[in-house]
Image 1 (cartoon, rainbow, N blue to C red):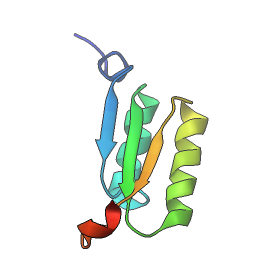
Image 2: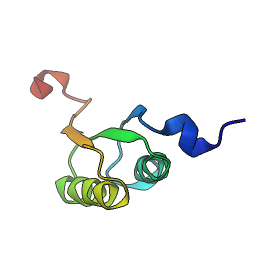
Image 3: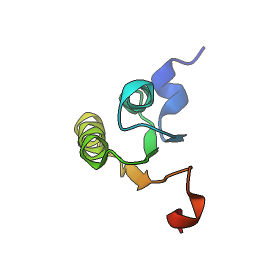
Image 4: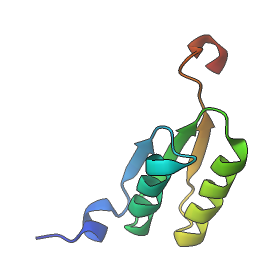
Length: 77
């Protein structure tokens, strides 16, 4: 049986709404197990930047953040 780190190493994970709360905690958890993280946030740039910095401290793996507002999809393009 594989441990979580072996299952997630070099995997890519997309998490929506991850600048704070549960989404942020999921980002950190998956990152600690070796995954590369891409996450979205809608408005809290400061916390999104903080989350990205923490991910890179845990495991520098080219993590990405994207500002996406699902209430107004036309503005995302």
